[in-house]
Image (cartoon, rainbow, N blue to C red; front, side):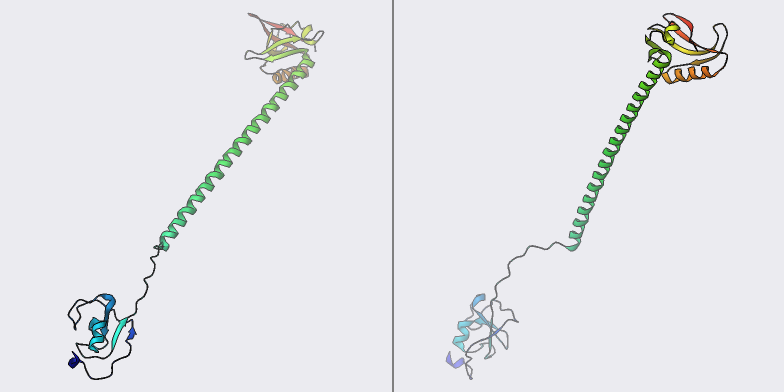
Amino acid sequence: MDALKPEGPRPDAPRVRDDLPVVARRCPFCHEAAQAGDVVACAQCDARLHAACWDEHGACPSCGGQERMVRERKSLPLPQAPRARPVRVAALLLAAGLLLLGLLVFATAQSSQEAHEALAAEREAREADQARREQAEAQDAVTRDLGAELRVTPEGLEVLSVVVDGPAAHARLAPGDVIEAVLAGSVDALDVVYPVRTLDELREALAQVARTPYVRPLLRVRRGAERVRVSLPR
């Protein structure tokens, strides 16, 4: 074995290089498979052989080169989680933004509808209250002017009560009578008929007749199964 050693100085230590991959292959000195951790390479012919075989031979058995290389071992990096693609992230952000926008629009529309319904209910309540006040005021005015308490019915104005010594009492109206119309003229000859179904219509008809000279107000009244005409004092 000593006869095969080339002449020249023996290197003290191998030069560390990392630019060439060192792979396990059959050693040209002992002709046995070399493990990856025990392999060195010739810097001249890139032959791979055992480090012990190089030390024993003193040079490359293939080309006689005196310089060998060893691979510096490096720790493998830890596996990292795959990064999301920018396009996918942008799409997710856009979808989330659209979802939030939809929820905001829905909440705004719901609040607007609730506010509209509340305003409509409040307006209806005010109108109903105003109608009740107007009805009470009209009832008070009719009671004061006619001397009778009336109730609105589909057939006309029903007499509920009569004030003593009032115009209705002098006209001989009685509870249960239903006033259907106001007549302008006399008992025998009638000129104008004002049908009445509400207290305001009754007040307006009586005022119209009162402004007409030479006529007196008459009421067409349904009393039970018959209709009669009664005269009111001017």
